[in-house]
Every structure is written in C-alpha cells, then in structure tokens.
Image (cartoon, rainbow over all chains, first blue to last red; front, side):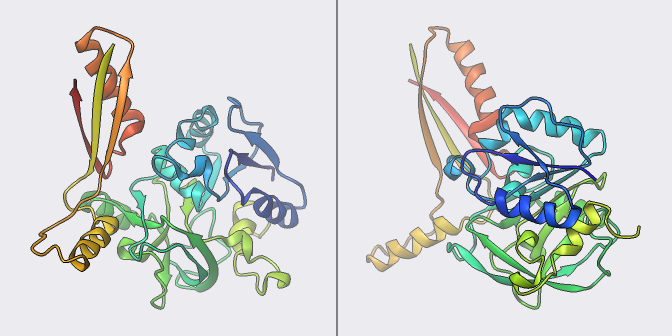
Length: 223
Length: 80
C-alpha cells in the first residue's frame, strides 16, 4: 500500500514516521507540503507529531486551516485512511475530522515517558493486528494531550466504539477524560492518537509494540 | 478603520488547569478569598473598514473559523 506523510513548519516527527512507514511497508511514503491542494493517490495519509506553527493560538489550530487539510478532508470522505499522531491528532480535532478537543495536560507539565495502552477496539483498519483488551507499550511526548469532549459527544464516541486506545494500568499522563488516548471517526477511517507508535517498531527501539498499528493500516498482515 | 477586541474564554464545565495553577499561585502570594480563576485570550484587531455591521459579521466569522475553538471556548466581540 502507498502512503503519504504531511509536512508543515514546526512538525518534527515526520522523519520518524517516514522511517516507520518505509520499514513496515517496504516503500517510502510520498511527502506532501502544507500548501498542496492535491494529495497523490495513496491508501494512507499520516499527519505526524511536532509543534506546527509553534503551537501558537492553540495546538494544531493554524495547521488545521492550511490548504492541504481540505485535500485530506476530501480524501477522508472517499474512505482513504488518515492517521494523526500527537500534533497530528491535535490538527485532526482542530480541523473537525475528529470530535472533541485536546487541552493542556492536567499536570501542566510536558510529559515524555512510556505509557501502557489498552486496545479497546481491535475491529478497526488500524488495530486489526492486536487483540481486543491487549495492553501495549507506547511512548508519549506532549504538553496538550488532555482529551475533552462534552457529555453528549463523549456518550456518542463511547457508544459507537470510537475509543480505540485508553491509557491503561494508571498511566494516564495528561488527565484525559475516560483515559482516552486515541479515537476514530464514525466511518472508521480517521484515527487520532497522542502516543507515538512509530517510536516503538523494532528491537533498536526496545520493543515493537507499535508495529501492529502500521501493519494493520498498511495491510501488511493477513486480513 | 474600526478597532475591535475579541475575548475568548473557556466554556463552563471545561477544566482549566492553567486557571487552577494561577489560582494556587495567587493564594500563595497571600491573596485570600479567590473563588475561581479562569484564563482566557484577548485579540485586538484593526479592520480597514468603516462599516460596523460588516466588521461584526467578519469578526464573527473569524471567531468561528479560527480565533475560538467552539468545542471548548466562547467568544465575545466589542467594537471601539
């Protein structure tokens, strides 16, 4: 499967993402700059992590209004898979592709550590390689990962199985409501998550717990 | 030219860790009896128009599209 990585000024996890996609799919993703209005014909579009536009105004707010986002919205509507990690998740919620908002960590501190994630929904295009209820390791590194949604939205997200990952075993690093670490849209093709699965894909990283996410999204596992 | 001020505040019920920290710091400075602190944002804008109705409409669109995240924030607009 072909993939694309979106690049914006201030994103700094794009190289890690490109390395992960290249190693797992066997081919390098195309890169797409923020001003582009068309995205090449790919099966997976990834918005990586970082600090787009210096986190000015609100994290991801300015990036979410760049031309490339209209192209991503159009592709998402066609069913193309879209993954946003960390700042990428913040950009997806600011762009309205995912419900809710990501606010300042309850501790007010930047957190950079490893957490445990429960795979709450393994019946998605991104998590088929995992078992429901499986607990995996993942690094996190963010200042604004505190997921919030109003009661009505939260009820819908929980009821529809849109919560894909929860922080497990008391490792919630940011105060997210219901320990939410990652959510998917109702259609099931847009996933946003604060943790960095791309930083745990091979033994050199000290583990490969994140590999299943890319193997799922890139269809390199048996369906 | 019209000068405008846009004020963006968190909606009721949305947790404000920064406001809480400021509340704590004010208490530590000896300011007693602070019930609540909520942090917000202020934007001062200059618009190259004399049409107040148009300015208000434009500012509302700016708030809806960028200045506020209406999932978590309210906004108010005042013209000088």
